[in-house]
Image 1 (cartoon, rainbow, N blue to C red):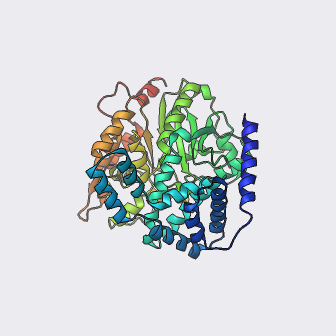
Image 2 (image 1 turned 90 degrees about the vertical axis):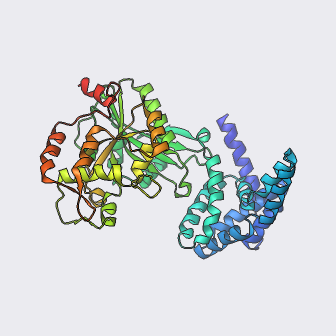
Image 3 (image 1 turned 180 degrees about the horizontal axis):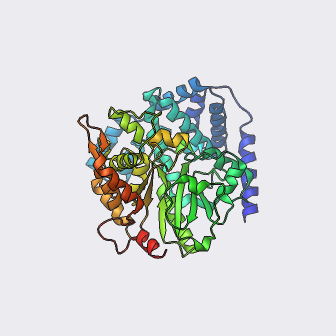
Length: 457
């Protein structure tokens, strides 16, 4: 069946490409207008191919002009929308409802659908949106086109169409090259570095793919199987670490999650990815009891600078102070709408995880020091409480954290200038807490997977 599908796909692709060879040199805007007026499948596909090819040949000035055309000429007609809505209010029947729906949809959405009828178009449209987002940063008038792309992509890339594939050392070389290139958290420096993340028995990697983009990962997660919860990325990625038999691991650590396609920004894959990976790992390795991240505190130093207390890059950070500042930041730093300031925290908390533990000197790479002075955090996915935690966060914005993180946050006192600081009186308490960490997550400890892990040694 797969061979037959591939043959049919090739036949259709040649048919469409052949139909587009009688090209004309009209502007891309005229071609787009003709495509919306086209009713024949083959002629429409030929026009779609010409538009996509024409767009690929444009420079940024030409691309911005095309998006400006879509924003102005292929947008909504307010008078038509009002008239259709009046008719529907007067007679809310099927015909009037359909007429209103048609009027309320910008023509550029239908243009994108028609462009997507030729092979390879989905990937080209994703790249087109990447251009749009980049150019709209310079010309905000182009921004009105993006909700239409996002609306369509949310449907085209919903979970039902996505395929989860394991990535390992035997995966095709072109996929491995893309994993290396798209890694956004902890850079992969060489093939040997990549091999250490994929080949050992205690390492896993999974990626979502879309059937229309089979050679392009959309998002991937790297997983370390460990005994206990690690507090440093260096211990996870160390070249000379001892490989653990997968059957001996009791913890799965999601230490890197990377979105691959800038043109799919704002289309959520991470929640589904983590839940699917957890389910697959539990099925493969029933001994796994704890699922945590080892995550960067991405904007701690930026936030401190915005509070008027920039970090001195030459100074050696005090570990206790760094942990307390990070805990305070995770619990208190928020945008005006109440959402956490930290994007990584926002992602995991919205998925139902909790802020479980904070670690100093956990990422001493140049990027780790620049972001947070080397601090990292574990977000714990307690499978029994994910839904409950998500509802709390979604309804009230409450940042759910372990007692250990809450205690650290209280140690960060506000200076007269309003910046968090750590008093010397509590530094020894912080040291004691670091030496004897409490793995409990909240006031109900009986179901805490971290405690179960500790009890198992």
